[in-house]
Length: 501
Image (cartoon, rainbow, N blue to C red):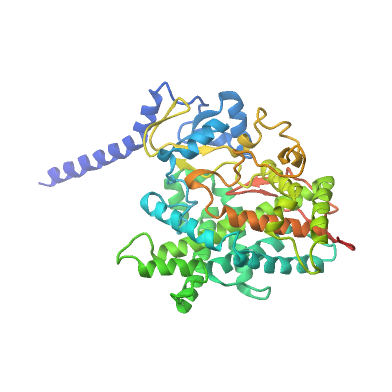
């Protein structure tokens, strides 16, 4: 009896190990015998090509594009990754329904938040439609949304003015300020300078961006990622802690909204979501409190991080390109001369400020916040650009390559906002495949909000201040890539203008 049990257990263990091994080995073997896979470099066993992606990430991808073509594949850890790098392949990848999934590698190390960014399937589709509908009401075109932005902008201008030309780290004043716009839209809540929650808000937003730089590679080793995250070890543990602090912050905002919710008075995103929860059929899994908290957390973190990073790049590129900064300022002076004293530049002033818009787009082209698009996953075997892409492959669009394609952009290495201007210079034109917020069904659902805040903040700051390098100089190429491409911390001088138009 005892030997029989031992043999049964041994056979079961061996069968389990073989099954687990085949789950890893079979996809690799299957790919090895396909001759129509995208070309690409060979890597090392287990780690793949990951050791060679140690610098900027997007720079190595662009170098591989030049060697292997606009579609190429390689192994990163246990994942097979296909990169697409030109207009045709990116357009196809972003529009294919088979490439709408987020892969398991997407959530960075134990991110507890389920949101429209990370979800898949029917729940994601429902959440996406809801986001688009709500942000159309609360978004860039609404007076309420711009009023929030203008109010926070006035606080920022006063804070910069109080520095009286002393050097400033832009993120120190931008992140918490921009976050207030989002918390107002999400939950009708703002945090003043003396509120300890304001510092907490800034800390976990900056922590997620900074720590993600250190753990990006671990995402391609799911087992190691899970172990390090659960044990709270190293950067994975600190990042998990930042995610949980962000989630707790979002839960507090949701609880406050639940306590003051009135069905006939929808004030913000949380109210609109709570209304859907209360009016949907019992047991509906598409609108739950967990999803509300996840959406609020992700939008605060992702939205504030993206907008403040874009503004930081604009400040840095302004300091590095004083001639172009002066051209933007000349537009702001012209617009402000027609306004009453005490007014500010608004989103509706865009048509009168083509050079300012061109400056923003050129900065986003040269320094895209996301040089590599958020990962997609193939839900089935497909052909992409004539190549076979197996089910489960990770797909990454290289926006950096797209925005620096020599055949499309003349002198792409040069910062030249004029490339976005019409021949007359009276309007700014964005090419169809200049897509800093991505494209298709997985594009940023809050693009209109981000675009409005960036335009209003940038133009008003340039109108009120001359942005200059500090004594240590300005270095646009000193950067790091985490979940966003950010400049390394550099101080800038915001010199108040004595006479303004």
